[in-house]
Length: 134
Image (cartoon, rainbow, N blue to C red):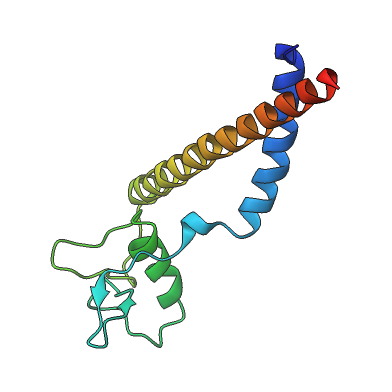
């Protein structure tokens, strides 16, 4: 006998939420995306903006937002111009781009979680059926 749809949905929601909490604690999909190969064959993330020095207090944040997540961009000349004033329009455009990236990451993770939860439920149903045969 298969699990009822209501029970299946409850298990998916419960396990999915629990797994999502664990995964959000240390997401594997949030690992930096290398942009350049070093001479020794290893990969390293490179700052896309020519005017942001490595010792700047916002360097890591910009490296993450531009290099890892790809949700902010600079000016056509390859600079970020971090000392410029940001208009509300520019802020909204940047926020929208970052939200789109985050939304895509969440949807992908939810789909992966759903597949895992369905596999667990199917395995549990098979085990229950085996027990019933005893």
